[in-house]
Image 1 (cartoon, one colour):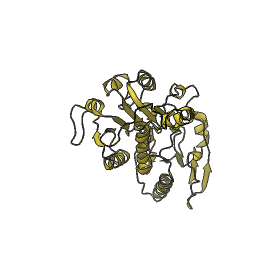
Image 2 (cartoon, rainbow, N blue to C red; image 1 turned 90 degrees about the vertical axis):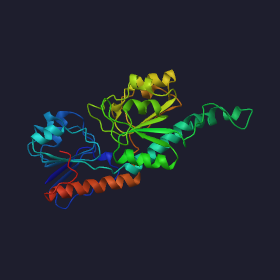
Image 3 (tube, rainbow, N blue to C red; image 1 turned 45 degrees about the vertical axis):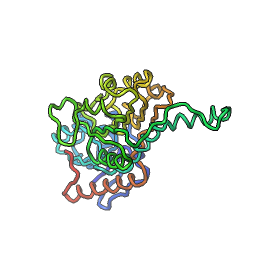
Image 4 (cartoon, one colour; image 1 turned 90 degrees about the horizontal axis):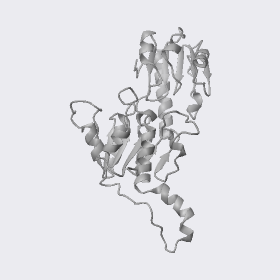
Length: 315
């Protein structure tokens, strides 16, 4: 079977070539252009993609393709309905990054609550001229006792909850937006917005969650509340986030994802040089343990499909 990895440079260590593969192509990066994707996969039986989109129009032109191995937990880059129509199996790698992202979120919480970016800058710019041994500025807030609201209760959301509770934080899990009932262990969507000191997003991107945090939702949050997004960029409205920061209603924001990745240089949020805005390049998933777990999961998915017993099937 011919295997093509469309964006192999998104994995820091080369994936081993399965012994049963009759062909293997590592493409460091493939343009997000239908013609480029079709050309890359023209002879492929198996496609590996991390973030390169496989749309209905692309899949309809790939009659040889039988399996898509998503090099991630989220699979919003693949049109699952089109895969079903064309008999293409799709597998993901669930839960591989739970520790890496979980620890990354806790790092963001400490950075925001203790104003670390502000004081790192202050140490270089204002401390040498200070008349005192310290320089006050941004408020330093407790982590223990703060209320953390979590949207998304999969492997990562649960890992964040476990770590947060170990720090003495109060944890709320939020119900789906517009859901009429509330499941045990959850609070209403609006309740989480109103009661949380920090909100962190760990839900998949779909039509129900797209722009789930916008101007109206930010207005329902506590003044000074903080927001963290390590899931998918389009879960938030970036203009609303900028407005919330500039007005002071949002006390801090940490983003590991943006609506378009890689973002254009003139991205609105990248232009905001604020001490309470942290932006990292979609990297919280990629600690050494997470990378090994991802590679192991991908190899497991490939081998299982080759043996006729696919696992982690999402379509």
